[in-house]
Amino acid sequence: MTGTQSRFGLGGPSVQSASNPSAVWIGKADNVVGDMASGRKPGRGIPNVKVAILDTGVSPHHPFTKKVQDPRDRRYKDRYKDFVPKTGEQPDDNNTSHGTRALDLVLRMYEDADVYVARVFETDLSKPERDAYRMGEAIRWAIWSRVDIITISAGFTESHRILREAITAANAAGILIFAAAANWGNVNGIAHPAAMSDDVFCIFASDGLNKATALRYNPKPKKDAPNFAFLGKLDESDPNGGTSIATALAAGFVARIIDFSRHLDSSRGVDVQLLCTRAGMRKVLKEISESNGRFYCITPWKLLENAQGYPPIPRIHRVLIRALERAD
Image (cartoon, rainbow, N blue to C red; front, side, top):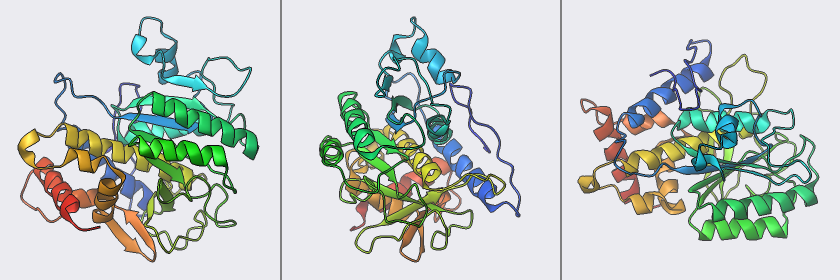
């Protein structure tokens, strides 16, 4: 498949061209996502993966917003939380569309996600002390909501105690946390909370050729941690790109992998409990990455490699088993 269609009416085909490697990359990723989605078994009571998006909120015109505002749909009653004072509980995106785009990117990779949206930032211009406090509160809300994944396409130049404590609590609760490596390109170092590499998947950006070393979006990688990178631009003609896009896509893709594993027959050998841990997912992401300097550039279609002749689902299944059995 060259695009996905979600219950929110999102998604669509990718324009693939040899002169547009980013579009080719996302098209190949869409195909893998479609293969994993084909293994779902609806009606068996298997829970969807819960993903919390901590950002600028969501557009009041988004399909997700309509579900939040529908009094007949109780499932969405507690899926939106506004941490910006005096703005009420009606979904908003501060006219930036940053949070709305993050939501759409998660859903592109995993259209069946149970998404939770927290509005943390009032504008594109952050006030660190205030917004770090709000983010910490939003993380604790995500813990209370029992989400599986938190994605944060933002960060701060300095560490803040309340944010560190919230991240530590989320990690202890077994939540996988993805955060953008930087919001300012390679001018400064790695942002917080992405810098908390023991608790957070710090996500850098790669291009359509799986290269990350020369991208202006990325700060200097760490020497003592896996520096995972995901596609940072969907189309070469798009002026926007960077680690914010990469983080939302990576979180959605990991949610898709977890969902795929939940729908496998229990006798098929994938240790789902290990897969859902930080250590287990790190093994899987390393397994399906290509090395580029100090970066691990995540390559979704590597889930289909080294098992030619088999249908897609058994091939993906074999890669997951092999990854989890490897020493880290």
